[in-house]
Image (cartoon, rainbow over all chains, first blue to last red; front, side, top):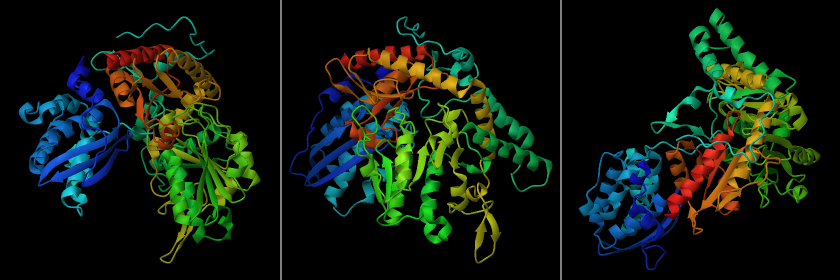
Length: 169
Length: 440
């Protein structure tokens, strides 16, 4: 079944047993991101210590892809230097924009490569990216509380948002 | 995949004189397959309807034979194009029971039609006393309902912001109907306009328009009806309904996208301020100012959507050929059948009226797996799509309804004149498949 390429067992595992879920203190920045077309929402906190992502915690509501992605993302970036984590974010974004042509580097992206199949479903790419964009935004705010535009989803490469909207009246 | 045989028990009774299989042959897209070789099961007609050959042919013929701009040429093509464009105005007027063709204004869609009224109201501030009925300001109230599509919600929020008026709304009951218990307290003497949906796009509810209109009239408020989901499916008569304005859209009634209609009571349109300014909507223009054309042209600035209007006329002819009463009866039977069939799916909860009484063929639901864990509508829709079944998932541009029923989103199956019981069976089988997939 073609769907199995999207709903990998790893993704369903993270969906059922999400890691790092629940909002925690202390934190340096908190953001709330929504996917207005489908109602997915995430509230995400970031704690940064000496340029390292000390903690990521979140509460979220949404489909299996968006929930699993939040779990995988937080597990991947916690403990990484911000620069390294941002590099992973770029790699994951590229994977999501690959329209099924890339596999992702498992040594670097770990469980996140399981989302490669999602890139074949343009309407679902934004589900997989929601928590990553929230993390990027929160991290920018944690590092520089004055930062706003630099890391908001709107500033992501245009291709990231170049997905058909399935939501119309 | 082959479609399941219609269930013997509770099978929808065929509507006399309505042959759905024959109807389906008029819609070429219904014969296509998806994901290689699966038949398309299109259950997303509340989002947009499919188009019959008659409509496709009309739009093509317009461009092949008659294309010109309307209302401004004196050559043959311009006259033919104008005649075709204006003929649709006659057809639409007759279709909704309007007594005067000048009461029919072509817009881009329902959203624009509703915005037209809302902006006309704030524009009344800058016009003479003839537009008093449209004037609105601080202390005045706008009343809508909690089940509005965003297109009949956001324009009124914006009007309230522009004018200082207050937005109020009629709430919902647990079974998806309007709570009219405190109607007189919601619609008061301060109310200037009541705008409501005829048939909800998310709940399927058909609202008791006459009761609300009666109260609105008592207090002298204008009434606006969003007929986006009713005009394509039910016989609608503006005189019987007693409303002042009716908005609807072509693309949900077998016409192309890009054309909608605002019907307005003649004496109101006569004094209603314009919304968009430009060519076609004027009378005399000087550098200092302009006077405006009478309706409907006052509200049709710029070159209109000519081919779409012409094709809308063909869609009206097509629906009339089948008969709106027969279409409504067919859809009612399908809706009743679907409600019964969906009730057999474990873990499925309908969001909206549980019976087909005063209800149209848009059915929203949420689903859980074997252990009672919610399966998100996005996942439901994805797995149904894998079976060739097209449904809509999300908040359906009616987020307050999702908030009211405490669900993040719903899955919605919606029907039209070409929907069959076999398609409903395929949906039910698909939902069992979804539950198996997420219960593994």
